[in-house]
Length: 113
Length: 112
Image 1 (cartoon, rainbow over the protein chains, first blue to last red):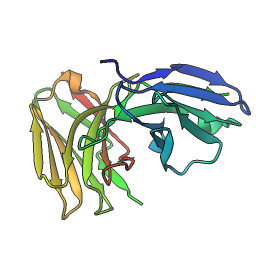
Image 2: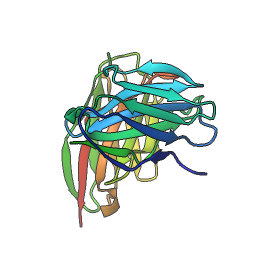
Image 3: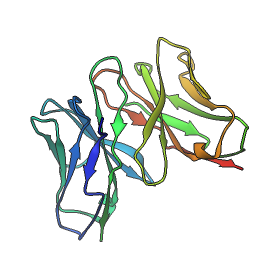
Image 4: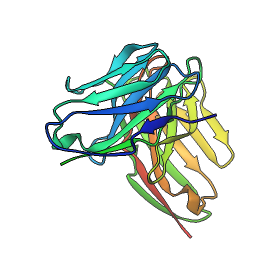
């Protein structure tokens, strides 16, 4: 069974640009969440999508957005990049039911210069 | 909202010794507590979890205990091995459809 796949693995962008990150969840998982990981702030929740609808949202500015497609694949977009957006962006999927645990991808390392 | 604290931030143990990492949470409505291990260059991996209706859970060398009254839970690793070296994160969630709030992490080093 394939795991959570995130592309690309690494990105370097310039301040002011925008970026789109992609996530393919485990087959059968309809819930996809995104987290930002930085040394200073740890793992911070961005948003969760379930059946193409945003179910939860963290405390990030509107420059951070996402969407989910009918096949459960998800994308997140960051517009007007700032230096502070440099981070590891992690996607996680999970099945519904009693087993709530996320399965994380390896992440996309975004560097803003 | 929920806040999760985790201690210690770094932990070094000799191979074969035990390691204990402790977390506290603030919201008594939290009912699901997973632990994740993150190795360099990889995403966090779920290693064990516990629900609020259970006080202890064990899986081979790893165990988790939960004290709902005190709102804290702990990860216990026995007979540590060098491959246990990683960053460990605890988390709390209010259950179905809710996001996780993670602790800041503990860097565990197992010295040969």
